[in-house]
Length: 333
Image 1 (cartoon, helix red, strand yellow):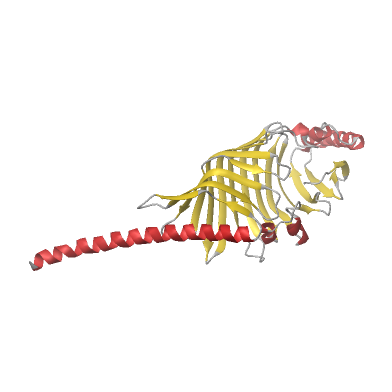
Image 2: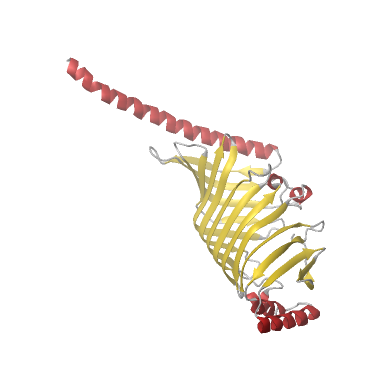
């Protein structure tokens, strides 16, 4: 009888573990749902318009997946809205501060003028890790990303996008952004660089977003206004680009001026500058004097075979290349 009693102990322990895990699984699910509902209430009380239709639990016993249906998000002062019929929120059971959001349906980005950009992708993952309630690292990874604005010609398509953002330990309020895009097809030519074509094989950037916390704020009709008013700036600590005749690794910085036009400078070392200068000179709409000067400069580099460090400046609403006026810059929005 005593021996039989000892045999019951492992089964009793197993039953306790099973019951404990069931309780823990449901606590994690309930806590996550409560946090979602609390966040929605906080957003709506602040003037945003956030709604979901339904949350259902999946993945027991090993995984935790909350299926969220009928999502709509409009910020209080952003002038835009996101809508999708379904997204899954995956929670790491042994580290609940790590969540992964997976959009499972196309995302509609509705702009302030009611224009719509449809966003689709394969293997669309948004990962967020927090530590003691603060952001540790967030990342986005997609395959076959497509942005389609039916009112505009062309579709922006990118075979692979990987982006990660984390607080910059060197300065409070700044964030480090690492971005990589491979095999990008532009929807239409880029002004002043039309001759570079629509295919961008590779783009990598290591960027510091100064005063990045201000990007979470917005003003009606001026989504980047609070960030700019906080002296927000993008600091390009490394920029690698392959595009048409251009292959370069550069540095620079950029922001918006009072009229919301691009302002900043890029320094781009170029090993073979002649094809790049020729392509820019052949872009339609370029200033005639700049076209002639660029063609002469390209010819000189063909002769001497030297490298070029290209300065691209945007100041006071004017884009200049090596000090030559290329064209006026319109407001970003």
